[in-house]
Length: 316
Image (cartoon, rainbow, N blue to C red):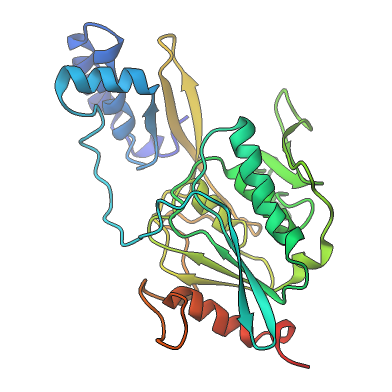
């Protein structure tokens, strides 16, 4: 199932995993063997997912996290702690652009639904914006469907279909239509796995100019959210190239309740393109303060400058 299976030396990796497993006394010790297996896949995105109690038990026994040896790229992002999908108005001449924050969100249920409803509510509460800024900076992943459903007004109703001519195997797990994330295949095909509470159609927004802001910590589902805007007309990316784990993961739950989350494919944009090295930007802007005359940071200022040149945001 592993995406890079043809590049893995399986006999060598199996020997390492079995050696770790032979030393294990219980499921807590087995975490080291599982981590050896998934880190050995070489994709940088597969990981061992266990509950906080078992993770803490390993740390109490050995004084370290079971996956502490993982190498993570250094990042410059200062936005990782954002959690609320807020909206802000920015003056563009005599008009305004709406900036929506798309932060990290994990899990499902009521918290994810509240997140998506608040994100979408920014659009219904601010009619008349001449353009939009989708600020994904700091978003390291989580529940992509909460993010994408909340942004459905900009993506267009029905977003998520594969590029023309692509095999059905390339079809995304779900599509966004009518404020719902609808499963595309499997035993729950055509079922809604996620739904906005107060969705209403906003068709004009799908053609509005959009500036997408990303930085070097945007990863996983954060990258999936950014990729959703690649190939969209009247769209431009600002900031820094993303982290580089724009891949699809699938969980395999073992009898001891360990969830081995394995990278099985790559995320694709609406044209079929993949981004193994991360999502690029059109205009690179390093993080930092903007002009003294403008209170926004440099990346937001660059986005505002581009929007000001778009016909929708110019004075008539």
